[in-house]
Length: 317
Image 1 (cartoon, rainbow, N blue to C red):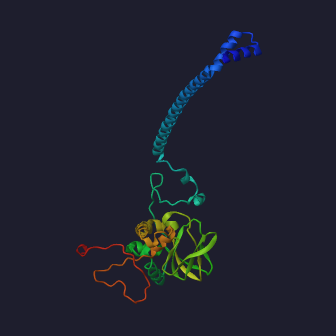
Image 2: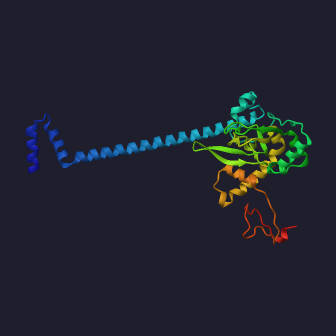
């Protein structure tokens, strides 16, 4: 028998101390029993490791759920604390006014509560002769922001404005600064300049009747552009408090209405917010009845129209 001869040869070669045990082990190895046993042992270890991995995974999931529940409880407690503390004066409002200059960096509206009572407002008054009043009234009536004011508010604004002469090349507003005033141009022209790709570029030229500097007051944000006088100018200055109490609400509603409308106009929907606000300010509503001629062929065109609303004839009173 070749296997028996091979086993005997191994025994004679190795000369084991326990020949019987040696031969049994040799026969197991020769028949493959040892390999099967080792394979079964590895499979058993794998099963044990998989079971242990499942237990660890379950423990991790349980711990994660517990952490999420704790976070929710903490958020609810923080919200309750915020509600409890809403009557206290916020820390930023305790700072002196001089230290608040750097804080006006986000777009926001005035908030009022027990910690910030809305006080009675008395606008400033700058004496003016009849000529100045008439000049200023004529100038303000060209501006969308002031033309819709009621007679009493319009008169209050006229008296609250201060005449400011400007020299050629004078920088009236610097981009990024805080803003406490807006200006209405009576005479002269000024350039609005923005930094675009690191270079100063003129984005708009303001002429008599135009308003500039109002964005910082409307949205409580830094100056959107620098403004420089092209030549000698005469402007009228209005302070933030007077603007907020008299003009802001009506102006903001009108501007938001037209800005939202402009977003739906495909031709100009891709322009940025600053440019859209400038177009909104320039819009003048016009009403036409059935049969009216809006534009005539071959006539020179100095304006274009955007249809805001159409109504059937039976809805027009």
